[in-house]
Length: 408
Image (cartoon, rainbow, N blue to C red; front, side, top):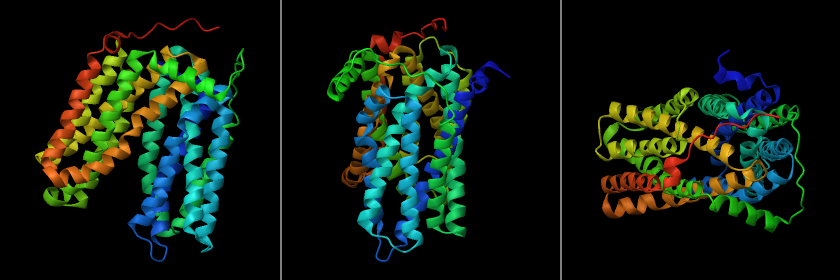
């Protein structure tokens, strides 16, 4: 077996890999099943659906920082297992409500808020758990393998969701989603890893302050997170909001947009395999340079270019996005102390994702004011400028892949 797959020989990591795969399948089913379940309610509108999805997504962001502290205090696999069980329980109750025609919108929103909060605890804990399970020399390949599983599950899960909703209905599709969380928790229960007890007790506030210090004291970390926040806002608004508009007006409609979205998903999957083979000396340069790829689809949609060219650009952007993500995860796991890694990851996730909803909110009004083409060009230009600004940091340019210390 090639060395880049060596991490899968580790039983605990292979269980984490299987758990993340199953959970990602459920997460891919959830939005489709939930959307059609809510829209099947009498009098339900897009606003109704938006309220349910908003509660779930906001909770994921709001609880990230607390989740990072908890994951650094407690055994990370146990935090993940508890989060999976809570996510499964909330989604199972939602499924039962829809299957028994006992739905009350307020209850569903509350349950989805709990579901989103539970998922928030998964991300920082998972980021911190990986270096506890594999050797430092295998971190890059482990991160790439996890992204392969998630990207593959996203593609397959969306297709499964469509089949389930069409055949057995959205209620049973939500039940399958709940079952995936329970199965993921069962897989996590088999992980064996020592939990390092902290020498000094501290309060939650002290842990938050220490995590912020670890985050803000590393210029290369916060510079890239700021750039990522701008990139995500510009791409999310430009691609997800204005992309379908361009497809509808100039590219032939929904079928063309589906081809572009599918190419992006395929590129994300391909990027994980590319990242398995890369060994950059300066990984943060790779992270930022790859992020330039986010501007490609926006500039081409602004044209608009021929559909085939946009499809190829979306595929290439997917490759760039996953390469950037793999080396970013590996960089944090290599250079941030293990005892504060989940907190730093939580601050990273919060900063990187915080402006995404803003991009979604302002893309339409800006386009109505200055035009779709100008808005897409402006969004692409901001991505270029933010990446160039990040490369101006000497720490970003010169951070090297640190040779791993001998394993004890």
